[in-house]
Image (cartoon, rainbow over all chains, first blue to last red; front, side, top):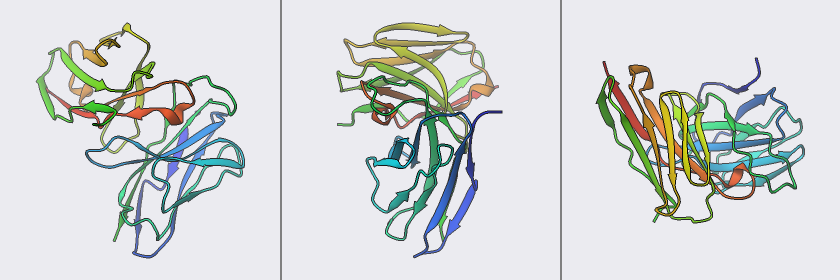
Length: 118
Length: 112
């Protein structure tokens, strides 16, 4: 079955640690996105990538890093510089292609990773 | 003022009721309007998509867009307990999906 897989579902981080959240898709989508979801706030874009080996900061990139070495994979690292990392993290993908102005209206989301700082 | 405003609820209705969920927005450049359903501790799934103004119907769901009022609605007819979820509105203009702005979501509970 095609889809987006996020792992782990739950993750606990100690203060000062970096942690990496995994996101894999087999939809052959070009674009991938990381969002953060907090109670009382809409989804906020952390990073996005429209093509392999290229990515752009979203609205709240500070304290996060990403890589896009393969089309299928877009891992997110939450670094110790992120002051308030406890949140629900969502990965998504769409067929949007770099260099086009066409608005792709459907993104598929993974099931999310809940990160808690302990 | 937020670009997209959505009442977080919670909204409780009896089974079989008609549910009306709404969002307002301030950016007149928005052309694409979407509704997502998100079950607890799950990722959002796209329910409805509408381009510009007008209505779109899909089974028990109807999406309405009124660009003149900057107001969008999702109606659910014959609501079922399985409709209990958080409903997110989302909208965007030109450019890629990274330009989409989401509402905070309205939590709906349908009581049997």
